[in-house]
Image (cartoon, rainbow, N blue to C red; front, side, top):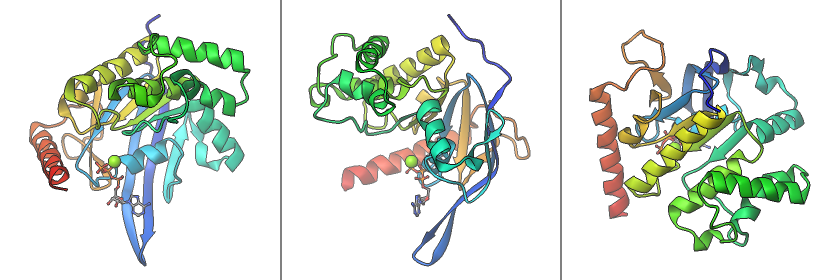
Length: 264
Ligand SMILES: Nc1ncnc2c1ncn2[C@@H]1O[C@H](COP(=O)(O)OP(=O)(O)OP(=O)(O)O)[C@@H](O)[C@H]1O
Ligand SMILES: [Mg+2]
């Protein structure tokens, strides 16, 4: 089944800000972000290092609390929930994938994928069945009993994606899921995210430093200095392409980063 994009706002950020107290100083990282993401959207977030992309994703996934402003999820002011209800929401509705897969090294692919189910008290046999199906979906039907150390980087990231999907979340958040992979393996992972979106209708938000990968998502957002930057000043619509000059800038910062990483 192929799902169509809908007009329902899944996520609405309203003047959302996040500051950290750091060594006696207040560091403003998100500076009043207004952003709407619709159910079924495929969104790429780009921008220079330190712009606040990871912080934005953490707050979007309710792993971190905003300092001010609101996050509406399906119209609900989600941070108004009690902590246990918020944790329940996060467990059921949001899947996370990070640059480093955070798989448990002592466990097999199946066990890693079914872990959220075991924590959520699913029946073991059912959880196992679902894990197998998910691993087949991400193309790892032949690697069910491999431990992370016995898998390639791309395969490890596929396991992490399968694990993120275990609870059938509505939202999949990926923070540089291909940052640790070569370009063609990275492209495969993005292809997988796109395919999952197409077949299940899951909303996908991915942070990436690679403009070519960002181009594969339907919507490209650019973050600079704690804000989503519109294409034309004053134009707050999303869904616009990243302007060429800013793309170059992003690629430039990527080059600088790789350069300093190589030196380190
Ligand atoms: N817990 C924290 N305490 C203090 N400062 C923080 C904290 N988390 C993030 N920051 C600061 O917030 C800024 C934005 O960080 P963030 O990780 O969101 O950037 P980013 O856009 O994801 O960058 P990158 O592309 O390098 O991953 C950085 O300057 C960082 O030092
Ligand atoms: Mg980051």
